[in-house]
Amino acid sequence: MKKFIYLFILYFSLLNFSVLANTNNMILKLKYGEVEIELYPEKAPNHVKRFKELADQGKYDNVVFHRVIDGFMAQTGDVKFGNSSDKNFNLSLAGTGGSDLPDLKAEFSDIPHTRGVLSAARSSDPDSANSQFFICFEAAPHLDRQYSAFGKVVKGMEFIDMIKRGEPNSGSVSNPDKIISLKSK
Image 1: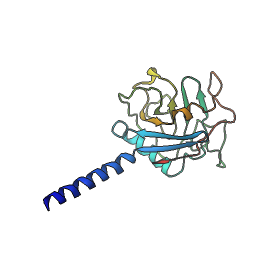
Image 2: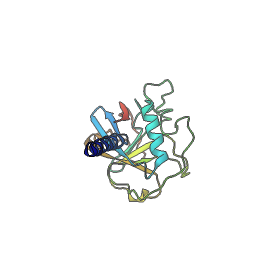
Image 3: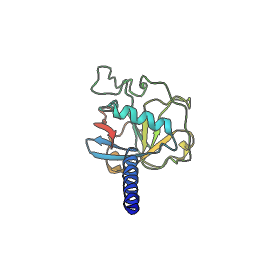
Image 4: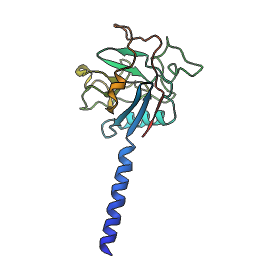
């Protein structure tokens, strides 16, 4: 009987671990394919919480990649002006808005800005991140410990690589690609 109880406890412990592990993975759907993202709540708990909250509410759905610089990064997440299916959509203002939630305090960590890393976009104020984020195409060590990195693409980076690039200097994109959907896995 003891053996059965131990097996029962072990089975449910492993099941619970599996369920918890998946809650920190997200699926980003692009027109090119699906991208899986692993989040790092132990490194940036408030940024992960905000990202998941907005994603699971559908706030990122149809939001454009308004700033995309070849060899650097693709930026998106302006839920105020960047949602191409919303009445407030304004491509010229995309990148200046955020959510109705308060800005987040910086959560700088030892996560390096390497290929596939997600990091919070912000103004010159380190504590101004809100809803916008970027995905690195290449390593950007000058951003390390300056921006709050909170996740990484673990599958489908080839689809991120297909995102339409913007102007060489500003990164502004005419007729930009968009997030089709972004949800917890």
